[in-house]
Length: 296
Image 1 (cartoon, one colour):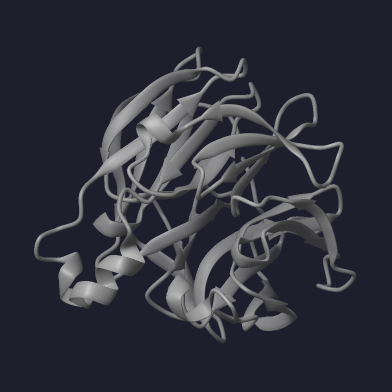
Image 2 (tube, rainbow, N blue to C red):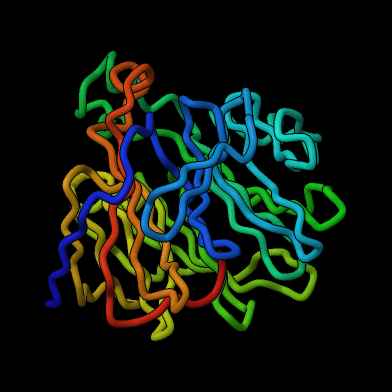
């Protein structure tokens, strides 16, 4: 087991999500500051790039350079730019979401793969406590495939809180974190962007896999929403490295000029009732041995 330790490079976030390395900067969403921001690779020079009143989450760029984002609370996929304070709706996802829309990944073809919570996690915990996530188990929900023309091409049922997702460099496989099932699942991607042949990629007992990123050796870094750590996982479930963070880890990305910097979005909690009006979340980073690969 290789052990890394991150350091805080940027603070003052409410809740950071969807870190993406793009054109020499780290981009990310901040739920409760209602914006898409970017910072330098060292974590300084924060810029508000776009405002998303509906609370931004997943981010991804299309082949023509447009930025797509999930607008969570109104359950829409939106296109950002050129006006930083206005977004155009690509598609209304509300018929397919049973609670907030969440993370996404966009393929080189321009297909967007969008997950959603499936239920109100924070309210359920407030009413029932942690045992409420076990008895009865929370409902499953959908992973939504939006084609490059902005049409819902497929709705995949039966996922337990589909969260962070990656696409392998050859474009053949989508790996998605199922937070409430403690596993990573994989799908084959067809030529038309639809998903087939679902399989378990890695079972992760006692882990709540949230945001993920892929490295050049085919291992996946997993932000563990139950602990102050990111784990490097091989298909089948072997854990080869741990990056210890200062707070609970919720999302991660491999970036920097050589894609060997692991960036982690951390926070004291993900509960909107306790952190929605605070700014205690951070960005942390460390250098790792294997560079990033694939999308995002």
